[in-house]
Image 1 (cartoon, rainbow, N blue to C red):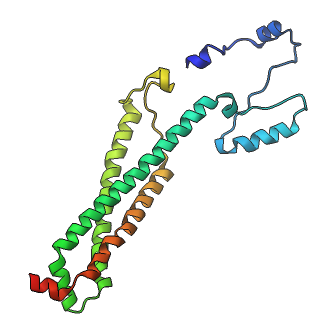
Image 2 (tube, helix red, strand yellow):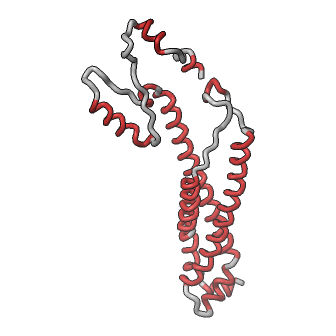
Length: 212
């Protein structure tokens, strides 16, 4: 990382003290490492509260704001991509379910003529839609996780170090987020399927059977 390598160097602290005319017990500062980045601001305030009035603290976000702005931009891109993917999946499922309902309109009319309620018929199509969504989610997981595993092991996809500070796309398997995305996608797509199923209530068995 040239932006850091051109500014910082690792050396004996005695050289720094000699250059700055410091005493043997004087230092430029301490670096405090934390395990959870979410507690950064809270830890910073706790340390600042016990320091002398002539001393101050700076978080890593304040020292390297450009890096964290870049990371936040990536997180925003991920959110937008996920939203677009859910919208595309929902539109495709709505289209597929509408086609199935129209193709099965004769069957729906027969079931209605035998006394079946709109609610019970709708459940049949909702269960089928949920099954298709589950298959799609599992297939997507299999393909996506396989690509991520290959990237994690072999670093297939490279990045320009000058722009991204790393030579390849890093991979982190956050299983809680993966499960959350899967469950959220399944629930959202299944709930959206309610709208095309409403078409079932508008199918008139007499007109449909007469047309057939």
